[in-house]
Amino acid sequence: MTQPVTRPSFLIGLIGAGIGGSLTPAMHEREGQQLGLQYVYRRIDLEALKLDASALPELLTAAERMGFNGLNITYPCKQSIIPLLDDLSDDARALGAVNTVLLKDGKRIGHNTDWSGFARAFKQGLPDVSLERVVQLGAGGAGAAVAHAALTMGARTLTVFDVDANRAAALAAELQARFPDATVTGGDARPETLADTLAQANGLIHATPTGMAKLPGLPLPAELLHRNLWVADIVYFPIRTALLEAAEAAGCRTFSGGGMAVYQAVDAFRIFTGMEPDADRMFAFFQTLLAQ
Figure (cartoon, one colour):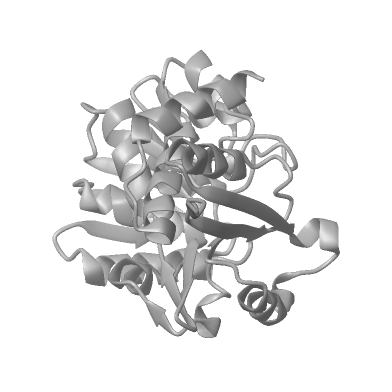
């Protein structure tokens, strides 16, 4: 009697707050189906569960007991999860932020695919722009990743601003040590400092939650945007944020968070499964999801 062919199966989760609109689960599940896998991806929404990051130890243990193969980690847990892991990839260790956790052989191994996803998408979306003088808003987990990406791609001067000036200064110091050939500083909290720095900048990277569907609005006054500035946003839900609309109105070249969303998922899928996903196919499916 012929034995039925058993397809490899994967159970993956996403831990974060307010993740009901995330397109990552659908992207993973669709690519898993295309590769002949049994692939289930579940949201673990802290907001819906009325929990916060202090529940991470309990959630990680529960995921292991239920046989999860891996977890994606998003706001506000990318840094607070690190003490709960057994090991980190070199990138995650350098960045101090994790967005992908492989659960295998009783070990929790943290990775960061945000930086590689952003870099790959940026090179496609804004391939010929100057990285001479770049301003970044946001110094959290995602901010650490995209700043690392910007410097890896050749940014010469990077100024990081954050609502927490100490956090901006700390990230700038870490980046300066890692990229000694560049100039990395933490901008102070005064509005005039941001205005002066942006006036001389070639590009702006936005890496805060402002502009997400649950946190609408602009992360800075629209009048600070000028036509000699390119603007890259990591927010992708909605894909056209208030910042991108204001930037386009000011004559800026823009880059949405969609590419980073896809390519971080591509890299995470590879870590979870050990298989190479079709990046173009995942990007095309992402576009159909946005259109729905």
